[in-house]
Image (cartoon, rainbow, N blue to C red; front, top):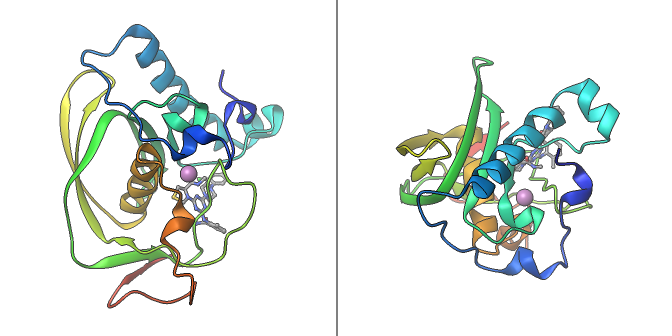
Length: 183
Ligand SMILES: CNC(=O)c1cccc(C)c1Nc1nc(N2CCN(c3ccccc3Cl)CC2)nc(N2CSC[C@H]2C(=O)NC)n1
Ligand code: NI
């Protein structure tokens, strides 16, 4: 099983690489890796399992973070109704987005960053993502709120972008023009 030890940290060159498209259909190894990434997130959110294996909690993980420079991401997140959503996706692509911006009022954290980086990360408030699921179906996801932020954070990892690259250097807590605050 994946543990936090397998997650590479900032400074590792793979985090700054552009990850490669996965040829479809994915190999069994690629499917296993993506399922392990999703299982990591599920385990990391279970207090007992996280304690037992010393797992740092996350709601999103990108393959470059486990030193696999391929365009694969996993997201496991509860929506505002408390319903859990799991995504294990190949070649995710933002095909359209709102002009309106949003940001996490808490700032963002990253499993590859072992420090607090203060500041708001301006993101698109709404994104439409096209991807292939690990089961091989094409999906088109229209996302907003926290899940939209998580998807943008993880897709950034596929392009070698870290969340703090977006923080305003002059004024880290600058609020983007008419942005939506996500608690
Ligand atoms: C909502 N913000 C905050 O709670 C937040 C709050 C304070 C400071 C910061 C800096 C915050 N920011 C932040 N906190 C998270 N977690 C909060 C705890 N949680 C979790 C923990 C335990 C069980 C279950 C779960 Cl679910 C796991 C996820 N995650 C992200 N990000 C940024 S996008 C990708 C995503 C990610 O998975 N990073 C590892 N940012
Ligand atoms: Ni990250």
